[in-house]
Length: 172
Image (cartoon, rainbow, N blue to C red; front, side, top):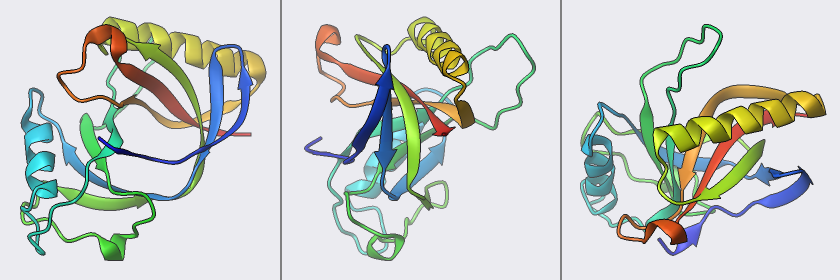
C-alpha cells in the first residue's frame, strides 16, 4: 500500500490525536466474516470493474466494528472499505461489476484516533475504544457515528511493525 489518505493534525489530548481528513471515496462491502469482504474488494481494484482498470491500493483499510458496549447500541452489519486513491472523486472511480461492492463518498470530517501496534484483535480494539471514548468524554468532545478501525499494513507485515488506529468522527 503505497498511497495513504492525507490528513492534517488539528490537535491532541494525551494519546488521542485529532485529524482533519478531506473527502474520500470508498469501495465498501458488508462483511460476513472471514476474507469475503477483502476478496471482493481486492477483485474490484484489480480489474473486476466496469473499466477493467487496476486501482492502486491506498491505506488504511477501514472496517466498522461491532464491539459489545455497556449500554444498548444498534449497529448495522460490519463492513470493510478500501480507500480509493487520494484526490479522486466518485466520477473518477469505475463502477463495480459485483453489486456487493458499493462506492460512496465520505465528506471531509474531523476524526479522533488512538494508534496502536500489533495485530488488531477484538480485545485490543475494544480496550482502545474504551480509552478513546473516555478521553473524548473528559475533553467534552462529542463523538459522531460508529467506531471504525484503520489498518495500514500488508497482511504479511510482522505484528510489532503493524500500524492500526481506532477512530471516531467528532464534533468540536
